[in-house]
Image (cartoon, rainbow, N blue to C red):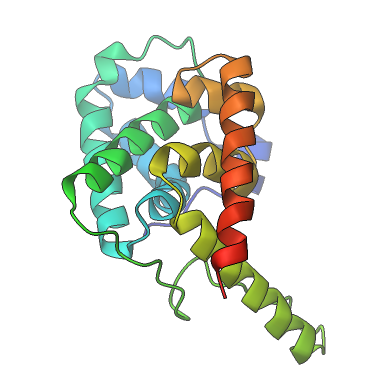
Length: 197
């Protein structure tokens, strides 16, 4: 995955904001689109991985999302934040991947997985780190067992930290419907957590 734009670069104003980059890309500026790719690929990959539960399929979903985003630039009106629009595109691509496959692939939580819990360096508490890693594994396994319609709002709200408004915009629902979906998803997650060893 490519590296994202540093937060310090954004703070200093040396990097145009995402909406400006998307508008420039819409006008044919390929370097603006390349900048969006560098900035957002890691985050979009993380979302896709949490939806499809497979690193290869997640990469395919992100690649498909970027192709779709490029083709759909003309539809970006600037009503939504650029990042919200990109989340919507990758979400659709990842859900398409899930619909294409037959059996569900178990979530890969090996050391190479971006979802592996990493304890803060220098904590000096290997037992606590092992317990946190085990709990993280249980939660991610339980999330992976949810239906995509339940998994998606949880991933965006709880794991990606998006606001209710942003998640509602990505899912194209109102806040009331989103809260209802999240409530059902959290209940389903609690049920799954009881089943995960």
